[in-house]
Image (cartoon, rainbow, N blue to C red):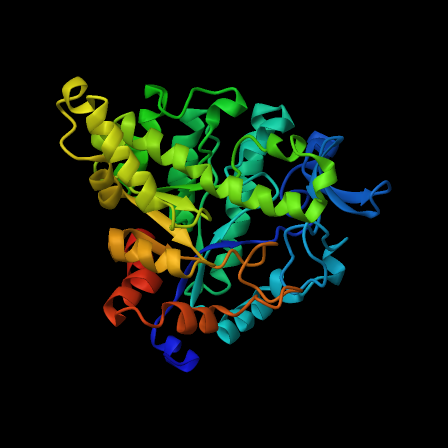
Length: 392
């Protein structure tokens, strides 16, 4: 397949990240009421860079996620948004980048409050926490409405308060949001474990609304950054972090299936975001083996499917850089549960940077996936995501 042929597919990038403007919350919330508790950016004198703060607590670099096109390898990153590629945050230029690289539309995930919105809990004020969620959802809806065919907003929820979650879910759906982000490790935030019946209300609400639950990697315990040997080198450690976070979603998949969540909510869809797909056949084959070997059908005669069958019915995997392992996973699992992403504009995304191996989505699809059947490509690149997120 030639790169130009990729344009026959309206490629939906199922994991891209919005770069939150410095005034996202300070321009939308009552700063006179809450003061510096409102998420804000100020200059970090020690590290000589802009940084996000919740109150006095630094929660991340101001421009750390806007890495596409940056000249340094991660974890080195831009010191401010003033020096990054405008395509990472300016919506008109971003659409131009998408056209250039063969992407029709992007599903948008956050950065500042974490990939499951759990960092909002550090604000410490329940009313303000909810207002932060609402302000974020408003912003992403407004951003997406600037080019509604090109962006797919995914809502944050105040998952620490189920009553507020139900209200915010309905409000966000009315704004145009197409799915829900959720932490795969809510117990890290002091809440019930993912498998606890407490969450059944959330699953039921999402199922009734036709909203998928999207588990982005790194949406819980990030302490892995503190457990490595510094002598290994910052870049080697960062490479290790990336792969360990990706594999962590194997735990989420196992919990969704073995706890009976998939069985009890058969129409609810889940997405394992930014975790790759090459390992999925091993994971599911292992689950099937242990399922039978450990007597799960005897313990739970109501479970009428094998783990691999529950997965194929309800769970999707997302991939971006894989070659042979990606093709093999598609061949073994079939194309119906696979989504394509770029992770733009993150440090390990499919975005040209200092690494000479980085290619555009158009080139990657042509070179790496071009041998696949056109019908398979149509599902992986567009149809699966379009159905999941209710877009054309």
